[in-house]
Image (cartoon, rainbow, N blue to C red):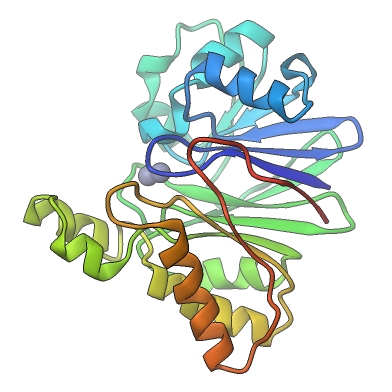
Length: 257
Ligand SMILES: [Zn+2]
Ligand SMILES: [Zn+2]
């Protein structure tokens, strides 16, 4: 499988997962045009996509979904709760495929297992994706790492995990108190420390590779997210663990697993 994070952060998220003839977007949270540009930038033809799979209705995940679905005739997979909360992006001509928040479904050669996450959206999920050989698990937009999320991460060859904020930067930053509370709650976003702790446990169980994702522009910095995780891993005796930080303004490397 090949995985590319086209964009990652509070300003918009989209991940392209490919295997052989199957290419699927998980979320499309930039404008349709921007997503097309990013795809072309990494050598992927948007006309070759098979579907868009949606995690939840926040605009940083669905901004371009309607436009791309109509332009390329792509089916859009989402839970009923997410669909009801994102009706404004659709015009009624799109092909919608509804799945349950714990369901597995296939798109071409790729199997998607949905799982619930604790996040302040209607029916938020994320996905563990496999082609039968390897597995990538996406765990972003979650206030805490639940047992369920952990179970999906521990079977992955590649984990894409949220490092949304540095606790001190969030608390010292410009956001109103109510928003700081929302972000740091168990139904908000995951901190660098929260991700680092999960990664230490996963690395001890054999995880080989992780991407730090969905960083806040205001409450985090790539170097801080990486250092927090790398320091905790090293402190717990886990060495040479490859950590990448996905960025908002450009696509990531293409990860081959
Ligand atoms: Zn988000
Ligand atoms: Zn969200």
